[in-house]
Length: 276
View 1 (cartoon, rainbow, N blue to C red):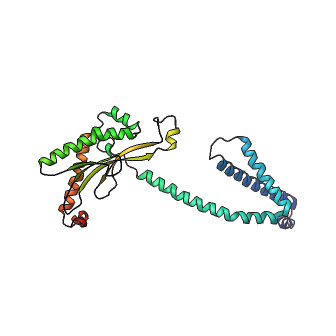
View 2: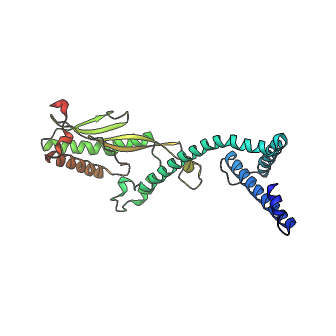
View 3: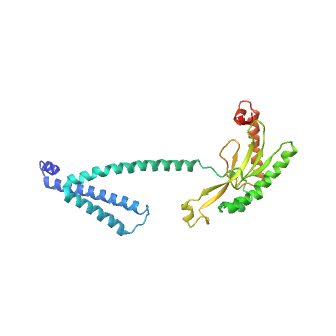
């Protein structure tokens, strides 16, 4: 009312009042349309195509609530309702901030992801076999077969060669979970050298499962052979490595292990105080 009383002090007061009324109507209509869009998006799980009756339902419900509040107490009642709903909306904003943090973390994980360990030095040979491996999500029996066909033979060959050089090595299973195998070189005063491979269970994304143009997925999980070491470092996915490449990887880790122990400034990292 004060707005219209103010316009009466100017010439052409009636057109100004009509223009102001139209602007207010446009503001409320666009605000209501945005509110309906948000409520419909939340109710439908952010689906792109929703039934028209659902949009109409939220529009009618919003109109009925507004009319009820105006009929009960006028503008004051509507303002009170707005203030009352502000606190829950503030909590929703807090949840949105948490979701934003998780989304940023997911984005960082995506951008920091590297190509699989077995593909870094791959020269492209036997690419058809590699393609089949990429399109297949390994299950528990696949990892067990990988242990039997590649990991254990590699460890056995290394064990024999180490023995010819006076190094005693052992192959043990089940030390890092039920499905694990490791090559251990025991020592008296320092941590034992350990190169192990364990089956790591990972959940397959629903987006990949539901897409028609992606590899077929029998179950919602996959099992990845991942290495682990004496010092607790995060291991690598070695599912694409051959027997010879596994041997090379073990030797790289053993060389690193010996070079650290040989350095007097770094050897303390591998000292086992329980053995002193």
